[in-house]
Image (cartoon, rainbow, N blue to C red; front, side, top):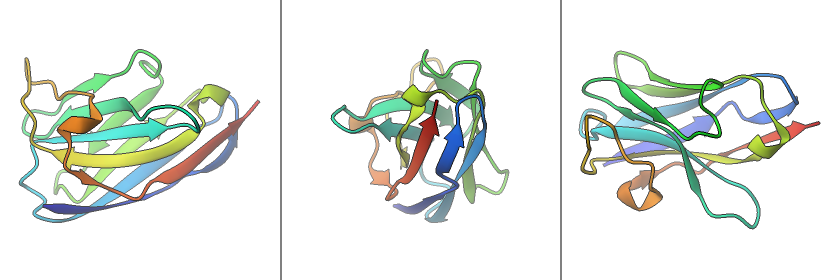
Length: 128
């Protein structure tokens, strides 16, 4: 089990950038997948990006592809989400998650039910 603490959220104008961080503690080498999810008011939680830790393979939702980058420091203590060209529809609470779900073609799934450990979230607000 790991403990996750997100930071880096805030308010930004459309077109701007933010970098979210997720500090990982506990059994940091146990989860095979780490991910970023987001949830806007009145909407379901959705997968934004995932990374298969052992190989570094990534997955992005179509809505963020070519704008967001998920990465992890080599020691495994921090997960990042670099966000560029932000849009108003990116406004949401962003959550870091970790787990060991089944993977296909070395790609971690984007379904929230597949992840066991969650952070408390960090708010991102994009104004147009």
